[in-house]
Length: 91
Length: 109
Image (cartoon, rainbow over all chains, first blue to last red; front, side, top):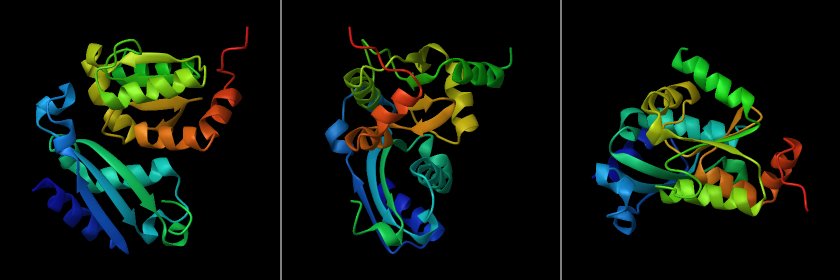
């Protein structure tokens, strides 16, 4: 299952304090972008690696960690990436 | 012209540029559509590239920007982000500021 693979890859790369991967593919089944077979996922992740990074940089780190998964298995990925110091302020 | 040069030229010559699936009138993906909606809500002046019409740019930009999905919004030559980030910036009032700094908001008539 793709959500499990995403979780494993991100856990290996970031050793997150918290991680949650939600599979939203059902909600999007049938729309044009979903025809390629890629799923829609949402990631909530808290890791030290995001400290001091901009949102774009955090997303880029995550995309890089997922590598080839982004090309096919994942059509869209919502990301909520926090540094440990921000978990109380940003959700 | 090399595709990377073309991308650079597009990004440099348009203070606000959206790479999207479809067009602002007929977005072909909900995420692209959402970004056009907030840009419109901000009265932004922006250019767009329909990546379905330019497969070469579609592939090359992913590598260039280290960003594998669309939409991608650029303001003043910088990647701002995809749908998530743009929505977040909009909800915090930051997007409006960035557009204003790029001198890309329609003046009130």
